[in-house]
Image (tube, rainbow, N blue to C red; front, side, top):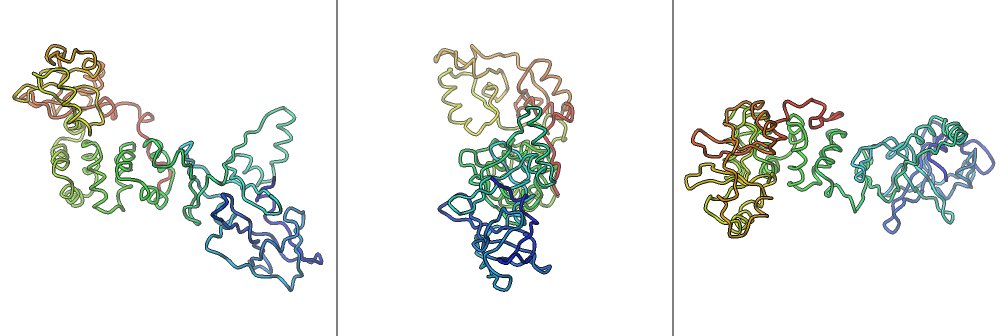
Length: 418
């Protein structure tokens, strides 16, 4: 087992032992039939200029002074290919996305393995030992750990889980069982908050519209604005349609007014009407933070029919805590939970198992008042009704509490978005 950091800078000599230069980099070639790149070239600083020779000219890469199989005057020139990866230049110190651990880490070193005379890149070291190795403290640290019987963690990632996204930017892990598309939106939000603008754009370009919408809902509105800044209007409009109406309205309110109007005009009619209505309310009012996606059934239906109605009408509702009951004039008259519905007899009328003591708020109520109602009555959501007791939307507990809980508990803001 050897590491790239251990051989960079070593002296290279010709067949007669004459000084040629210093090892500056290794060129690895990715081959389709094998998951680990093969070392194919050696970059040497020769007379203050880099030259690249084929790896097969190297007699022993891990010798204290690396000997070549040829004389100084007979150095062959390496022929580059489109699949070349320069390990020090393109990989070392670059960021990778660990989709399994949903984190961004940095490449500290690369492990090299020789199999049947061929040298491969086997693992990526993202741990402390990689750093210590590069500053010359790995040996002392290992000896000390052995003396006190401390097991040093192995923090490496196999190269077959690594894919170069851009040679000059960063790598991302390719883990079929836990690809970016299969990550929880909160994990994707955590990842992109650690990347720069170009890298984030590449990740978002590879995502479906629905997942972009879910991811945007996990970050603060100010960061949402940054993320959609360079997206086309067509794509942003599609994303807004997939977002919860209150989240979409919050984002639109932060965008330049001209673009906001243009985006709303490009949205589907129903979604556009929802966000237009939400934008008319003060930002921190119940109307400003409510969502217009909620489940509702008529008063005079049975439990079986209520289930049928919900199956047909509530498929797009993400927040499904309660089902609200309205009369023929759309007045809010009751509420029940899904648990109530499941345990009700199929022929039992909704009015017989609903709770008619519904706690409500007004669209112009302050957000703190809404939060107090939710906490006082231990609710997951509270309906917002107008002066005629017609339900306009619901405010979920997380949206109501967002402005009054400690800042450290809020959705994470990006740390290195630049």
